[in-house]
Image (tube, rainbow, N blue to C red; front, side, top):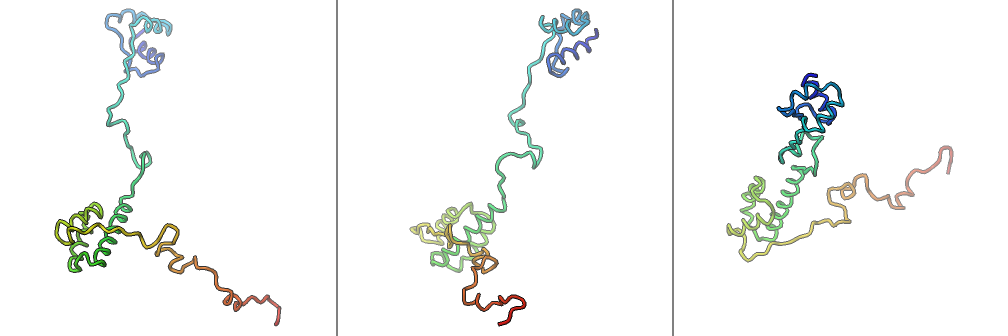
Length: 186
């Protein structure tokens, strides 16, 4: 039997590809003499035909990404993260201006620095203001709670603006509504 045929049969028997099959150079005559699948199995048992070990993958290629549908892990919305960060920093700037810790003349300069994204967080901004002499060195970083608590609606929700989630009309107004049934006269 031809060597290519023996290689194909051995690959099928060992459940690997043909490229993973090696035939020892000294046993080529025995391999060419194999006529049946049983002969090939005997050569495998004898050690004339061997299977190469799997190569594996490089550590960097283990989690190859192919596209958005195949990505694993938490997706961070970069715009949402930026909005949270910049809004917190702007609220903090407003607090410093309102309390008088920062001169109002510096508002535009600091606001533009915030917009450029040079501060990682409020603490970095506060340290910059302290080191620049814009706020007193002994001033502690003020802590404040948001204007709305966990159980009260935020000011931008519909119920706070008086949208669709309005409370029901009072009883006095309800009495004035037209509830007459058709055909009834008073």
